[in-house]
Image (cartoon, rainbow, N blue to C red; front, side, top):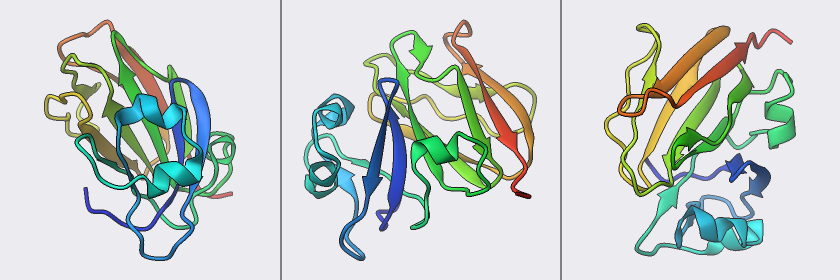
Length: 163
């Protein structure tokens, strides 16, 4: 992914964490992996810089906080969720059309995001700290599962962005 200015909402280990970009045009990266982010103040996470385990997050500058993004508000942005050992972090991701969902594999085991039907392309095999993003432009429910672990199943529910 390209590094860009952002404001984003993240789901980290099932807990909501809101990040807001403070300086214009500064790339948003954090080092140390996802587990360290849970222990960081959001401003520290943004300013942590590069390291061995870099994850870059992106979204529109007007991205809502997680509660807004998942409440059916008509503002699109980005939701980031983890792939854990043996499960996806969120059993239901509830968003509005135009929102990008990014999956981050925090497990040491390889995983793959595969959608039921032909709605979207499947991800490549995701190694630890790899990401996969899909922008949902139409309303509906989109089931997905992990290719090598088909017992890992979840849903993205997309509401229209009509207000």
